Length: 349
Image 1: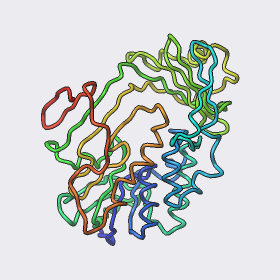
Image 2 (image 1 turned 120 degrees about the vertical axis):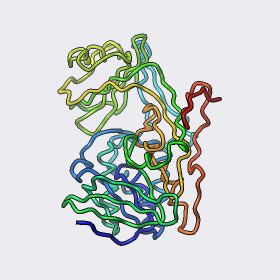
Image 3 (image 1 turned 90 degrees about the vertical axis):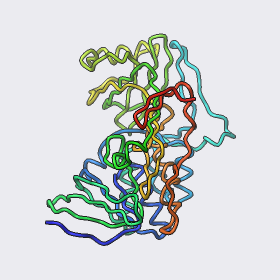
């Protein structure tokens, strides 16, 4: 069955941090929006990713009247002294009390997502889970369309003024931008991180280590879980990292045994790189979060970058103001970045 739904000012594709933050921002401006999310609610609210939100992200949420989504749910203060282990020697890392970066919190992503969903629905937001086969149409006109298949198998078409593509690096939104328009700038760091989810608490909430064998860290993901990071060669595979080797290597780089070992629930080798797409808007389509850029996960950019991105999106536009220029300002790629687009590849700078 095919049906046409009511129009909305903005259709947001993707219900992650960026999409949910934007949806809540729009509601507070009285702008109608619909959020389409491919997965079901249980999946979205339970997936564990980032665990820290920097001061900029916290400040932005508070400025938009969303302080409740982080207050009372954090697992510690990001501004407290963080142990920094250099070749096993313990030092203390604390930001300047007068820095604008002071005010971050440790808050597992699933908690932030749960709270953003709860507030969005409570305030009358339209959030549709199980939206499959999303496609964007007529984005170079004043009347774009979004088509998707719902959980019941029906195909629905929604008209709107703007589309916000916040469906991640592998989502469909960015593919709607013509190939001869889109440019991709990348930087490869030359190594990977072994990222591990373990069912053990992180006490304190964050420990960072710099060692001749590589970087290492343990960062909280809630009261009973933590994310472990180990720098490793790009050629490593997870088969080369059995659980005992992971814990032993963490002990070595920390210079002392980890206080608690426990079950490891997932592990992945992730090549570390930066990716920035330009332009970040085309016609009536705006790209947000990982759909627009992938930044190194260091410094908690996993949540902080998406939570800041929506402030440079349709939330600042109106139905009578349209632009085809980039909506966010990202640092210009240096000579260390490789730029590809329109069938070319060069060193930018």
